[in-house]
Image 1: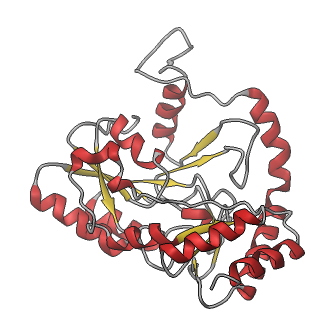
Image 2 (image 1 turned 180 degrees about the vertical axis):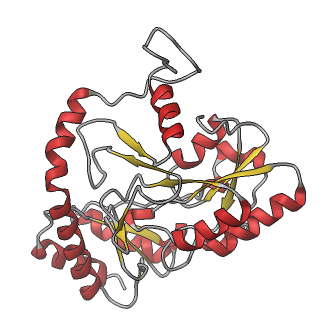
Length: 307
């Protein structure tokens, strides 16, 4: 809204994310252009991103305006490549850091990449409140002032002077109080999440593909996700976890380009093959800072029995 992105504009984003990532594009009136993912990191594939930008320019129906990379499961995307593309095509970059608050790459923290970073404080996130909440980050003062205004009904000099159409997007005071206390524990919890992820990695069989990281990156490990051999293999594993009262999740079973809500965009099965394959095989194991090593051993034994 602050950048005036609207009908006729193309916004490029990963097809492998929660629906909200693309929903905001449609709500602004723009058109999401979905990009495939890297088979190792599960993050947006910069090579396919540039291919999609070139295609939109060639077609001439939409104006490329923005890229929304997602730091999937807490792992920061390849922003070095993304920002080169951004500069080449003069685009705006929003870092979807909903799952990655506390993550870093080359000592540069999540929410500090791109032109704007946005994170979530939903309870399941690395830094969670007790309800709904989030934050946006930018070094652009003009953009900051616009976003601050939009946050409270487009207010001007006070809430009864309205300079633009806005929203009611204030963070509740109670949630802010919770976050102020929990943020003190965040770095310690990120360290614990990485310790647990390393235990998983050391003990899990080579029969599974585990999300790879990028050099000099520290994930927030919002989720610990791995790939089964195929859908039947995944089904057996999830049944075993369920029978042993071990929680699990599938993120994400349907890529965004195949969601019913975007059927008018005419994407077909096979258009983004890497994400489509991964969505059929991926599943997530329990991950939180207070997971015990004996529980990790139990989980690994259960999934190993289904190899």
